[in-house]
Image 1 (cartoon, rainbow, N blue to C red):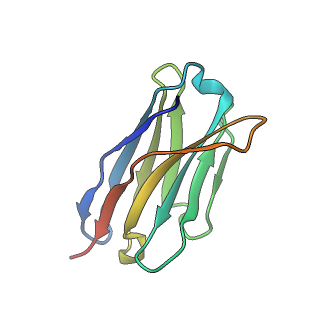
Image 2: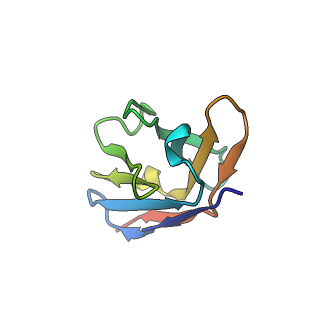
Image 3: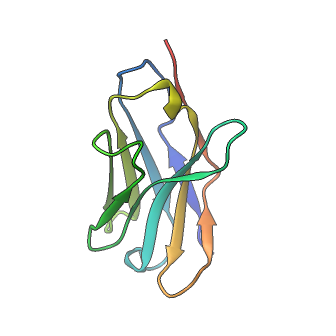
Length: 117
């Protein structure tokens, strides 16, 4: 059973930075594509960024050049560094894992990120 636990959410001022972490429990971390999603009130959950074991990444247009996703395969952890944050980044952020070759999604419980002055 895969468990994902997010850390690092909170309140940040516009223009500020925040770093999210997601600790994973699967036996072989490297065979999972990892991603961060977010869901703002009244909106659908959307993909923020994803990363595969080799390091290739993908970002939503709204966060390109501001957010950076990374992973530490040895520590089974994925990170999301968020810089130059905007009020529209306010949302619950979810860690996601999908094992290659399957369509099974695993989700963390989510962590609230609020960007406000």
